[in-house]
Image 1 (cartoon, helix red, strand yellow):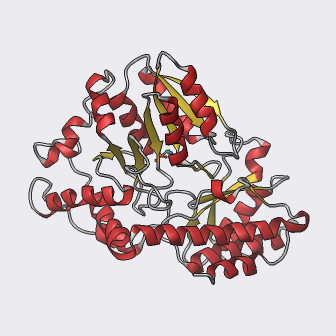
Image 2 (image 1 turned 135 degrees about the vertical axis):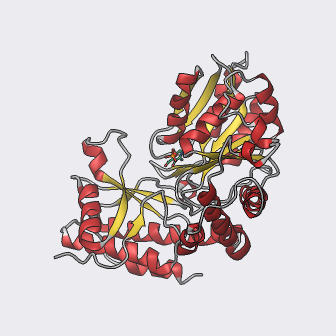
Image 3 (image 1 turned 90 degrees about the vertical axis):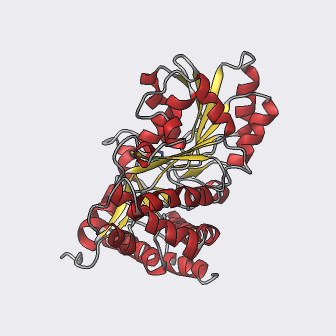
Length: 400
Ligand SMILES: Cc1ncc(COP(=O)(O)O)c(C=O)c1O
């Protein structure tokens, strides 16, 4: 029997749930792209993106997904043969470094595994050992979406400073912007990349680069820049056509405007962080309850301080991750995130992991609905689990 007849709920870690208001804002005829309301709307986005990232750094908007922003970050700051130090805490910083190989940069990975954050002491030691200052940049994710590990960005900055090394500090906030506290200027981040499709609640297709003075300086000697990715004309456009190196992504801009209205002017960025934190704690409490007394569910990241508030990776055994996901999707109308644990689709580990995306446009019935659906799946599939998960989650939510 299928129960899948209401509104389908996506709880994958991006794209996230798109608010109806954002969809409706996009539902309009093509505008004039050269002058008038769309130009004003475009200019209004930049200061609001700076507000979300807590920065006065320059912002460029690319018509691209996160991989595009990765490439823009690399090509605007680095040169062929440059070495970069990658702090691996799952999959995505490693992916960023690998993405750069075809441009000619040489990534070196310090791998902290799939469940632990980057260790600032190891970063400091690696930079101290690089007396010739061959590393031109350090790449890290604030949240690694595969593992749901959260890195301590201020602590990593302190480690770079303590080493006296001049490498640029480049942070991927694709899965965390708008969901986790992020203070680009206060924390001394030189360059940050993000995307619109997770905490910013807009359909995939826009990504962002935030570059401070040090990153802008690096552009002057970077020899990898190409016409499309070059940020110089985007930061100093002669006309709106240069903001996007061509035609504006008109309807994405309408959508992003509405999403930023909601995040910046209605809820407020700090309130969104607090909501994300409460929901994350509720989800962790439920998983801990399911895992009690020999239950077959476990949080991938043991220390709450190192857990993302936007995505949670859950470990199971015997392929139960895939069984739970399939039941939730087919019988109940809830799509959960696939496991990326073993990095190779099809391996046994992959079938044991699944992820809950809990970023952006979420309220209590959505969070409790996700947890209630998983609870039903565990019972329907006869997967061993502890009791009281929903009670544990609602207890946390009642703290509001
Ligand atoms: C942390 C992180 N970085 C980079 C990416 C790549 O972004 P995209 O898939 O939009 O190219 C993702 C996608 O999930 C991500 O979560």
